[in-house]
Length: 243
Image 1 (cartoon, rainbow, N blue to C red):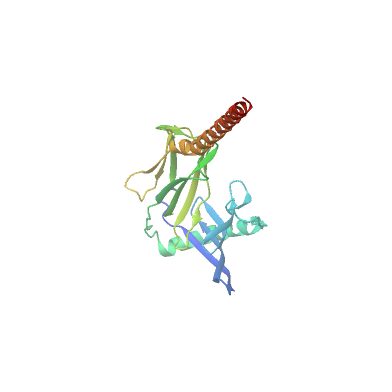
Image 2 (cartoon, rainbow, N blue to C red; image 1 turned 120 degrees about the vertical axis):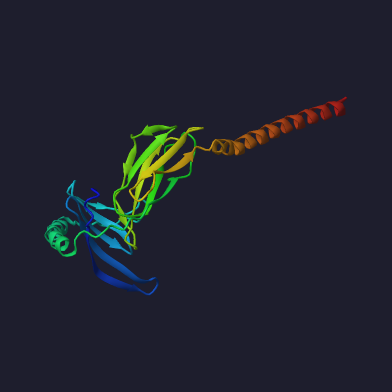
């Protein structure tokens, strides 16, 4: 987003607040946001983005994580188009009325972790999360052993937090090999410099996983040798009695 476009029209319409006897109040609403070149139309529940409309692909996209229960996603096409028109009409009016107020910058906090338990030479994903930043965008770079990586990289949609800041996830598909070192670097205009997180493949993972197997093999071998020794002793004892 161009830094000169400092005015962002953000309209949050709370459709309903549903009270639950177990968990208290839940907030469900629709967020419409735009500047001179981009638009956002999404449905949120308790501060989490559930579904949004992709104006580039012209389709509705679910934002639920993979482990969530399946849900029927409503088509937001009609509402998103109306929201875009409303935003375009109101933006110049608000710009003239309020001018260009300075944007309050919030720097992202970056974390890097594996999606599932790490096993050597088994496909996995690294997740780089940039959270609690404003305004968009952030830029995410990946490296493997100090070399830039672009293949297998994806950047998800921006999620709005309850305090108005944003979060985003970038993932990198990879196969852990001993000694590999990965990094995720995030750039944002609120940062004094790029923020980098390092993730190394732990070679002890394989050693620890092999230990039970080695122990089992040793135990089996000792059992076999013990059985053989017992048979030899029985044969010798019978030979002594017969003689």
